[in-house]
Image (tube, rainbow over all chains, first blue to last red; front, side, top):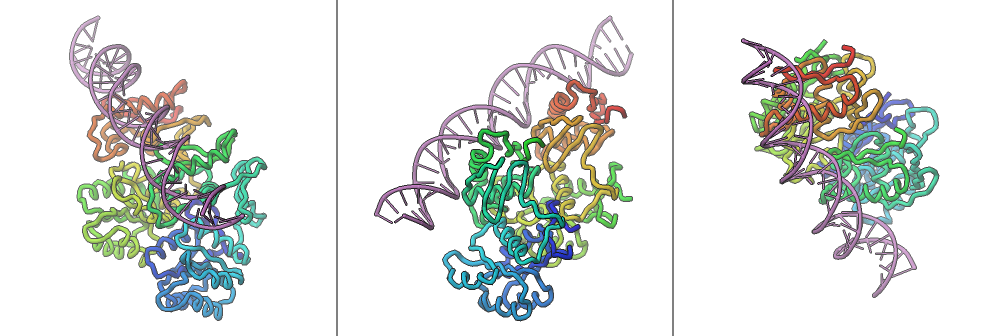
Length: 248
Length: 248
DNA sequence: CCCAGCTCTCAGGCGCCTCTGAGAAAGGGC
DNA sequence: GCCCTTTCTCAGAGGCGCCTGAGAGCTGGG
């Protein structure tokens, strides 16, 4: 079976082979980081630096999804999309765009089932969106044929689509950052995650601050999730934090 | 079968051949120490002193992993990483970085499956991180095809990911130094380890103190692991300490 | 334009971790 | 049994990691 580098079972194609993703961004550093994060999900990834290279790579790779920067040196991201759809109408696209960019045009294009994230983004967000896209497009399935249980750790349950979290059936309200932090923890239960690791995944790639914010948000999460209950979030001094079901 | 110099079965490639590691550091002493420690694991190791040499060596060696100093005389560690991934997308990277250096820059670098340790580090830590990286990347397997049992000595069990230690099912809380010391002992069961050996492996390479700390930490470990039970940690007078399962 | 929620910085403080030194205990040679 | 060496134990100082509260900057909605 295909697995992610963290040992979790990977999201795969319906036939069980690795999903193929093409990353298109002219910033080599950003492309590198994205490529690494998607490979970490157990997917087969290729990168391209401009529209022409992207189209060439797409013909060769036949990707299931494309992560596409809207601003490319040689051609518009939308042009790339149109050309892509000519040969591969099934492909999903996740746009990367600047916050103040023309969101109207994005909105129009994403009507077709595609999605977008605004720069600067966190890797957790990109991966989550991509997983959502692929799942909705029917291009991916969970490795287990049984129904997808979603994210469940002990009596803690997260519904990613509804953005709802409950513990012991009780609804818990979370801010966006709290939600992403908890998602990352829940995707890696019983595993100690260092503050640097958390920072890399949950905060934007251009975040300049110190790892202290992680402590802060962990304390917020504890107040909401562990308040008055048996704690699930544990500090491992000198190492990081770990989320565990109460009995374990 | 491939074995470590200590006689332990080595972590190998899936095909059973020796794992290949490239060490890149401009400090020859440090590179030497690292090279020795990794060879001791039964791996095939080469060293390079700068980025250009690293890239050349990587093309020749085709390493599974690279231990890479972030500060190199000729080029940035991140640049080396990107160039490496151009030709060898599967390679794992373990960064070495100064603690007080701009850790922000490391943020994002480790976004893929990669990892880093801060100087000064202990050899146990470097080896453990590297083993973790290779294991998660699916590049390594235990020599026995049966599933990896992790670290088990008698009724003493260590889960490195969760950073949990149990004896006879009972959870034992350990400080970071205690944890690393025990890991070293458990990786070398039934083998007498001298205080000097332990100091070299578990404490940072720049530690100035004397071997007395080893005695002290052994006594801490005994209180937590052997307390009220049949002892597993034994003193071999004039030679060192040895960890043995109770019946053996 | 004001208000509310979110995010992040700063600084204080507590508690654990690490290491030192001195003295007690144990082991081995004679 | 005596003495020397090695090892163990204890107490404490210092440092650092982590947690928390207060508040400032920002943003989006009313």
